[in-house]
Amino acid sequence: MENTGDRRPLASRNTRWAQTIARRLAAMAITPNQISQASMAAAALAGLAFWLTSETQDGLRSMLFIAAALFCQLRLLCNLFDGMVAVEGGKGAPDGPFWNEFPDRVADLFILVGAGYGIGLPALGFAAGAFAVLTAYVRELGRANGAPSDFSGPMAKQHRMAAITLAAVISAFEGLWLGDGELMLAALVAVSVGAAFTALRRARRQTIWLRANAAGK
Image 1: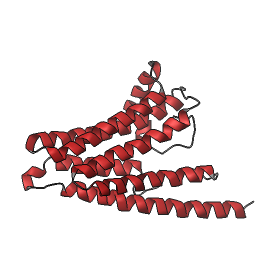
Image 2: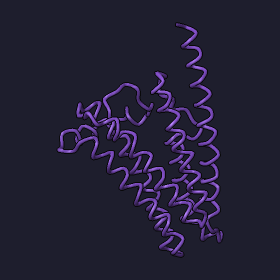
Image 3: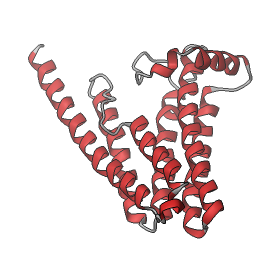
Image 4: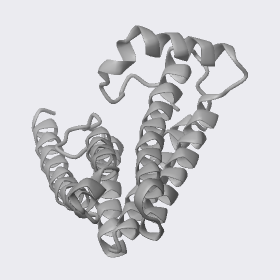
């Protein structure tokens, strides 16, 4: 994780529990890059759990949905603590900027594609993953052009994971109403459409900023 003030605004970063855990991690022989790498492992396990829901039934299927939800949240915790250990803990590394971004793109693909395979619609999972990556690409393109990072939604990373996590938790109980993946389908459609809109919105905001900045020179 890079040592930068241009960071995603997170209320959880200022909570006592997060600061306590971050201090303990910073005091250990754990680097921010390793935490970033762990986020990919968590996402891979989430994607695997989603995929296996298509091969299982009843109680085991419910357990896999809960496991997938927990691993999605673990991915987000890794994303929180890698930055806190790097910046607040002063353990940033020269290659931090790479590990700050690359694992997030891989994690999105693992989770969203796995969810797509879980409901038998891999193309939808790939579409959601592609649009998720596009939102990040537009943000990083803006930074390359000198604009501040745009973390706006409506389907930024934390929003995507909230939608997928909520769908997974509720889907764990879909046997009660004889459901079969409808909630996850709705979540993936929402992520796909929302992420596409987010990418377009960020692109528009970026071009407006670039024109205004050029006019002010």
